[in-house]
Image 1 (cartoon, rainbow, N blue to C red):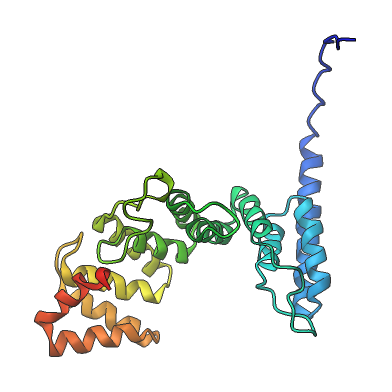
Image 2 (spheres, rainbow, N blue to C red; image 1 turned 90 degrees about the vertical axis):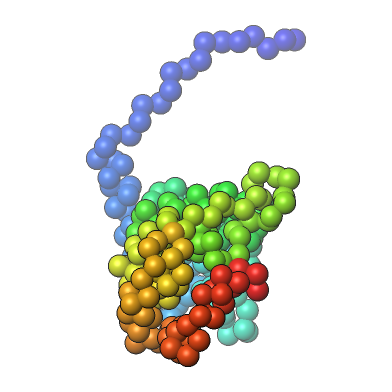
Length: 251
């Protein structure tokens, strides 16, 4: 016999705001308890706690559960990851956390898309999540966005690819400098080197060798050895230094 359509039942009423707030508070409390277990060295128990808190909607727990599936939460007594490495599960966890506003999860999800780990490779999605991470305050995302746009760095994507998702991100020195400045302001030492290179070569910004040297000296104080290379060659081979930078993307 044929099925006969019946009137649809009305959708269930959403839970009251107070219930939502209690659920969010319970999820975050479970997440904090799992973090405490991590600090105490009970990693296996912590991962179970992250899984429980993630199911309850904790963005932080989803992020840490993603780290677990990526094999980044250490090893057990047998030298094995505490859970079986599963890039697809890691990417799903990062995406749930990223969509809930977790800045570091946005960074990790961008790397998943860039490298094709657990998801189909997509330069476009990688850059979108990198920019979202930068807007959310992640300094590494700010730096990575600068690198993606920097004309003196290799392309983010596959030149000549037919698929739109794999085509390189368009270079833009001015925007790259803006992201590097944001990263420098957030304390990212390597961004000082890259911003200095843009200033020294006049890529996307007005040439300013003095400002470049100041950035490189500050980066060197933070232990970034590339800054020492820049400063030494600036003094010893100033005419060749620009050519080295401009040819860097070919290396």
